[in-house]
Length: 483
Image (cartoon, one colour):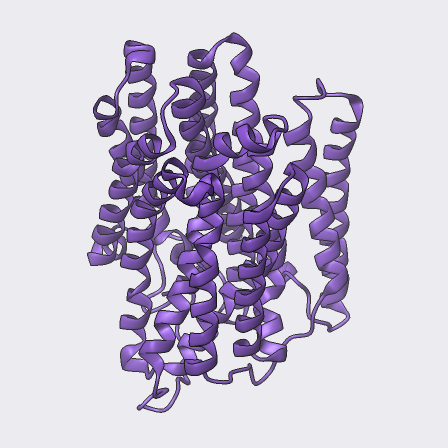
């Protein structure tokens, strides 16, 4: 899920007081695209075991279905917004929607693990082109007094998707409509994508930035290579028994990240537009935010995957039952977003992040104790209180996180900072699937119970890193700052 649409303040120079004639219909089109992305980020965690049973392949296939998508989105997001600024947001939105729809159809038609992973990567890249356009379009279409209502529509829509998405995915896999099985979770995007494309043609206005920064293609290449060198060995290493090349690749990732940093500094000094503004890393608040964000989103995505695998692979539950078991977590997150938006985030600022993390830790610890006490006889109701706490705490962390991190940077750097943060969120998603998925599958040698307990222990470690990183954040968001 991308939070880019909710992370920037409206421009002071908004559109005319009247706004774009079809602005509410256009907002519905933008929200439909967000829902497609959110559902596709979630569904393969649930459908992974069924996909592997059908297509074959090793357990790493389940990890690559998530990691390929989020990794492609992470590296694509840093340029997606700029392409809209340069070539027109409506045009890039259309290209993104049609590409995402075609990639979804290719996912549904895939006959081999390799084809499916390739189609997932294509989905991620087109999603990265599609999502950032919504922000610029909304700011351009709505008059200043309606912007808050427009951005406010994201919360309920995301909440309904988070609750309904896993249930829908589980039902589609179980129902096996016309023999489609797991393929239905991708086929559903085809009519939704075509409707969004038709809506975009009819309702979205032409829109581009008055001053568009130039593309930094070498920077994109370096950061893509570094991310791949990091994630690939983390997923594949376990199956190959950690040969020397896996460690060499991870060391190479560090070297390429360092080369990327050097190149960005050099590019900025020569007066060209860097992919990431180097001055951001001189700001303690932003660096702390990146560390905390990377650890937190790694923990969040990894938890979702491992919990789904535990229920299906470990306990033998059906995809629908597994999807329903996750509802308390999704509901907890929705309630937390509502409370934070009702003034809690403004009143508590950074402290809300620490409160949220404490609640998540209590929830994960509670789940560990529940599983240790009940073992394989555990039912959904036994896990519900702990999962509710996990979701509620995660919502409390996520709601103010972007606003608070962005309030620690200068107004002129907000665009670059927001793009970098959103990309780090997606990179955290890829790392969560890679790291915690690998920890879980490694632990399976000792049985499913020890595997899930070890993984939840690793989850707690990531939350402690987030807790420490959060101390570097500003105390609260700027008044009227980030949205």
